[in-house]
Image (tube, rainbow, N blue to C red; front, side):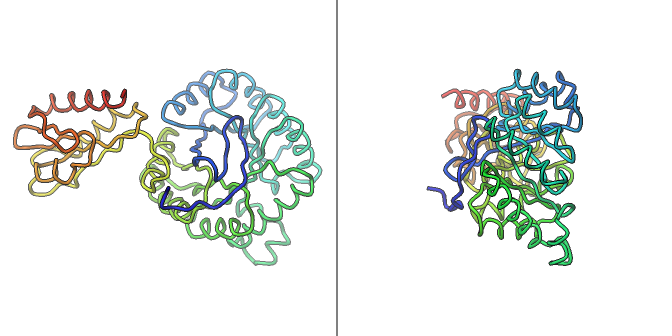
Length: 355
């Protein structure tokens, strides 16, 4: 049993992927291609599938993009969410073309009858809806109550949308309450989580570039996950979407909630270090990025750290003068040159991955 007790939520399906507390936390990403460019979009989705993306979202700003969903769906293996803003007709067209889920913010769709039309078709086609709430589209009455787009205003907005959808007889919904600030995002999600049992999609929106965005996301998402909040996650980065997926799994792995891929453990280096640990560790991580099986691989700068401090690693190498020692499960098995050590390390890890 995990050391983290997850909040109990109902189950909602996106295609064939269940989202809820009875199932593993789902990793999502979003394409940055023009959706109507089917070839490029499919190619990017397939890359994301290979690194572990389980649900993909695509932007639908036009009729052409909505129509492209039909062909994209034929050529990918994971469920697809259509991201809709402003135009309810694009949501309807996306559902008709096979989208597994629609992401909308009722606040920018407009009149209630437009949202009801989306609900009616989604119910007919058994398509789930993700309701996104942000500070830019809080209803006037709620904004007046709080005086600003506070976390409390975000949570109350989401709760009011839940009631509206329930009154329409539709509960096949999940929610996201996202902001670019860690504090407000965490507080809003905690308030919402205390008052409902709907699944939550979590993340810090507009988090930033690879390094700063990963750090901000790790803090915000990590806090929520530690509190047991979150059924699906996207790490928003100004980077290749594959990095979003990798960072998501790193966060989940650190909290022992999901394990995927090779975790490279490397020492921070010190005066004992006689090799370029940074460069070697980066090369090892890149060469092993195709492996999905959870394994620990160590790259250490001296014999003190490896295999001593890294004895729990499945495989590792450590610099020892002009040679490298190779160790497996804490036991030294060979002494090699750097080039030999890297090749041998990769082979040993690939061998373990196949077992």
